[in-house]
Length: 304
Image 1 (cartoon, rainbow, N blue to C red):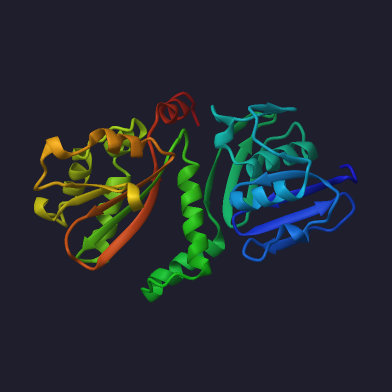
Image 2 (image 1 turned 90 degrees about the vertical axis):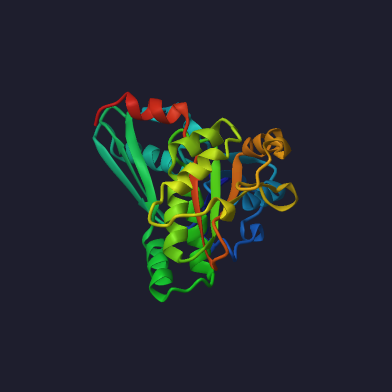
């Protein structure tokens, strides 16, 4: 490492940095300011979240190198068809492990806000990996459900951000889907219907292809037999804010639905949906990703 370099790691919950001869410093993302970083440095930056912090660091320093995952680097060959689908934190962890333990089969575990696991064989070939919530996120989720509290606190906000990143990091994914099911008669009803929609291959492929086929949402709702929903209670919102477009299923006049406008909303990298299933007071928000050809290729042509 050169003495002129500053190394910065932006994670989900903390920002860490050091120079060649310094200790490692760390601040929570809520308290971090680019003013905390030493001046007159060339910066090597790894970030898996918080683009606003990346932008602030780019504004402060004239020489910033943002690390991105590559298909091949040194002795490492990663398993992902699209290298940018692999977080730079996991990429750097594998490079570090190979440097310290060359020519060995490696299991690389990184425990932070998220827990990541990657396997590299003794030839430097990445065999695949996974990402899951870390211990604090899991504890926060258990606490939320145990108290039946809907009040957001820093821990649950962190868990929410992590859930989004896990969904965004899906194999072959090109779009993040945020789905809210509202108007349910119970929390369990909202949860079951939201899971049916977000996990539906027909819904996921429609969103990937920007196909405004609202009938697939109706199908996914109807599959939840224990919580039947009347068609005249069913309302589907595409997008949010001023761009929001709605489909009232029961009173639908097909000629009045702007399918082209809905398709345009579905082309965004982040797709926002709300499905209203009645006039109840319970709701649930879940996150998922689209289903792509790359997902099939990544999972169909290897043996574990």
